[in-house]
View 1 (cartoon, rainbow, N blue to C red):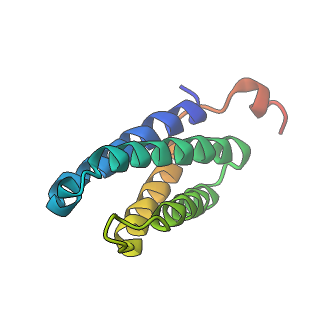
View 2: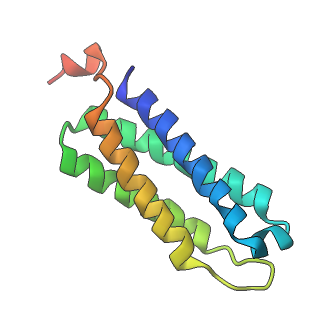
Amino acid sequence: MGKLKVGIIVGSGLGLLDGLSTFFAPEAAKMGMMPMIITGSTVKGLVTGVLAGWIANRYRSLPIGIVGGLIVGLSLSFLAALMPDPQGAYHFVEIMLSGVLLGAVVGFVCQKWGRVPAAIANQN
């Protein structure tokens, strides 16, 4: 399986788990935010996976893959954290911490597993 596919699968899966972790935050369920949080986290993980897979195809370096995934996860999480909850509170730490961890893990997995497509491997 290619690095991009690995990124998509792992990123989406971890994003979904990140969104489902809000079941442990009963205040989110009370505010009716669960579907939005789960969908947003899954999409955030998907985009992180796509970009981490692209980075893994382009640069075959574990540190670059981890830092690249970390930066993508941090950036997307920051954008998500800019939206306040219905009471007007912001949750930067909770959102950005999970995004950074997701990005670093996806970047690591994309660099360690998956094959580089032959067309890309022959270019270098």
